Amino acid sequence: MKLLWENEIRSSSVKYYLLKRQTPTLRPFLPSHTHDYAELFYIERGNCIHEVNKKDKEASKGDILFIRPDTVQHCLKNYSKNFSLLQILFQKGSFSYIGDRYSSTKWESLWDTEKSAKFHFDLMHQLWFENTFNRLLVSEHSLFEIEKFLLNLIGLIQDTGQENAAKTSGHWMDKALKGVQEPEIFRLGVQGFVSLCNRSPEHVEREVKKRTNQTITDVVNQARMSWASYMLIFSDADILDIADGCGFSSVSYFYKLFGDYFNQSPSKYRKSLRDQSEVKEKRSFNNFFATIPEMGVYR
Image (cartoon, rainbow, N blue to C red; front, side, top):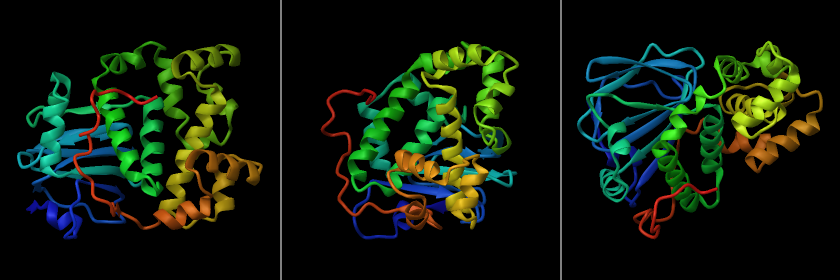
C-alpha cells in the first residue's frame, strides 16, 4: 500500500505540511505501507513496535521517529492501550528543501532508512514538544508557529550535548522524571516526586533545578497538564473530575494553570481538538524557511 500526499491533504489548495494527533481509536493504524511524503512522529504516550522494512524497533514515550519519502515500508503494531502519537507530514519538496538548506551529518543520519533511527527527548524537551504541538493546533498564527517549531526541533536534534544530558544527574533522577508522568505520582504533588528519589527534599530540589532549570512544583505541574490535555481530548471525563484526578484541590487553580499553559480554558481546548486527527492550514505556506538566514533555536 502506498499513501499519496494529495490524498492526505484532501484538498486542491497548496499545502506544505500537515499535523495529526492520533490514537488507535481515532483512526485504525494502517498495515505496512509506504508514502511519497516525509513523516516524523513523536510517541506522546505509551509504547509500540515500529516495523521498518520488516525489522522491529521498540518505541516509547519521548521517541521521535523519522520516515523518508518513498524508501521506507513501515507500520506500527503491538501498541499499548493508552497509546497516542503526534505526527508532522511534509511534502517531498519541502523535505528536500530542509535537507539542502540545513544539511548535517546528524540530520541526515536521523533519516537513514537502514538504521531506522530515532531520537529520544528527555523530560524537559518532551514537555516542550507536547506543549508546543498543542499550541500549534489551536494557534491563530500557525504559519509563524510551525516555522518556529521546526527550527527549534532541528536545533535540538543537532545539539549533541542534548543526547548526553540524561547522564549528568544519575539513575535516580532519570527514574523520578519518568515516574512523575504517572497519575498515581503527580496526584501527590511534590511529595510524590520526592518519594521516588529516596533523598532529602532539599537535595532533590537542588538537583531538579540543575537538571531542568525548574522547581519540583513546575515539573509536577507540567506532568499534570500533559495528562489533563490527554484526558480532555481522548476521554469523556468531566473537567472537574480531570482536575481532581490531576491532584488539584482547587478547581480555580487548575483552570488558571491550564490557561497559562494552553492560552484557553479546558472546555474551549476540548471543543477545538476533540476527535480532531488533523489541522488544515488555510493560508498559503510558501517555502517556510525561505526568510530565515541561519538555523538557530528560538529562546
